[in-house]
Image 1 (cartoon, rainbow over the protein chains, first blue to last red):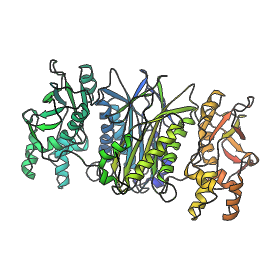
Image 2: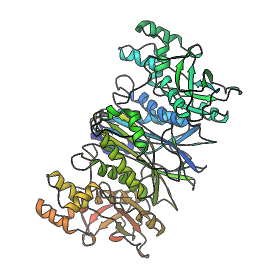
Image 3: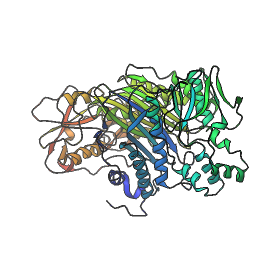
Image 4: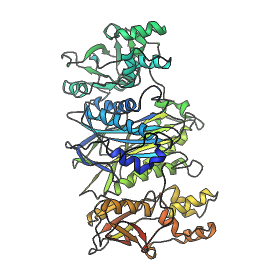
Length: 316
Length: 316
């Protein structure tokens, strides 16, 4: 079906939108029953399903003037796919709930769906169902289902002496967000990193096979999320700033905005790298970089001292 | 932990609320890993998972002045558990996303969670995870996972000659909604039916074993939802009003409001009964009542003629 370029959700109606969406989401082998019935059915060959839900609220988790609908689709899907990555798993299916004002452009909603479908394509996951409803504020609710080959890697298993390592970019999205918030559109690499994160989808299963003792994805902030691992494992973590990569563009943004660039790396979210702990006697898998160490105690320190910067996103 | 009676979500904070919620949701055998990590892990012994997502938006799907938080918890869980019921399945796990204003009472949120947990308890499902975030408008996003013993019953299999049957109450919630909308609080049975629907959770699996050819749950309206089955199956359905139960309380409400009471039954949603089609040569399972017949053609008729009343909820 063809959607007129100026059509709103109200013009198209729920069923018109569902019909248009059906063309956006391709079929996939693991989907035994896709969208269109009371529920979908997904194959789970190993007899257990890994599941995670995230809500993405307009003007809080994304801004429609800072990123395209396609980018926002990528972002919201990436956040959920990353949660499964952080268990050492891989997503196979997503459901997407969209609560939206009736005057939202139908094209915008379809581009959002395309972005979600494209991001899912990176790991072979399929959108299998969802819900559409009116609301005053745009909210996207994503649930990812998937599987994990071996034992799911929790936050609880870090032991004193373990090496702390990271896979993926960290601090880039925060740098992009900082410049967007001040009305700039560059450096391009950082703005793009904010608009469309690139979680290291191979790194989670890789870390699981390499014997990672604990793992988390950094969505709220490096110190904050490492803090969750420390608390869940009842250990202390020290991060070493010498080991944290600060890309040239972040230095530039820091200089322009009068901010210590390391703050983006330590406090920023939205990039969805993985942080994992590994036994000290093993080589790290490809793509993983050492950034600190686990010790007895509690809390997160940076270069041995407590960190006084903003540590993460406050949800309420 | 003790939550002060006047505390808001902002007072409690995300992690305070999560800690309080942890006490609301009991563990369950099928939950291999519950809330608190990046994702949950649920056992799916038969190698496939049935999944459905619904969004519930404040002032659209529920009103906080018309039902308690506990009731609303029951309602939102029931809507999703019912989707799996309509496939012939049973829910084993729910994720719940809550987007809420920071000044929402923490007690209200905990009562919502208690209602969800209680409704889940009716079918042995467990809440395994979710997400909490701030938003201008309260939105509850529920995803139910579950299993189905035999072949999932879709909307597509109704054949000419099949019997159309219903299990569960229908029209009660619409009657309750109609009186609440006019500022009344009685008849009590209907108001309670609106506040806390009672989906017939045994009826879905029962119909599946009895050879139901198609099935749906009535959430938007009887004629509207039977219309989905007719369309998906490429058949016509005729409903017979003589076979539709109209409880005494609905007659009373109809008389008081000047509304034909059958309109609540034909157009009302929110009760979550099941409607299924069965081959004509078999006895209906217990609790199922014949309400019509499948024929060649398309569309839904009532006593052989087209129905001109409101047929269901318009989402945009």
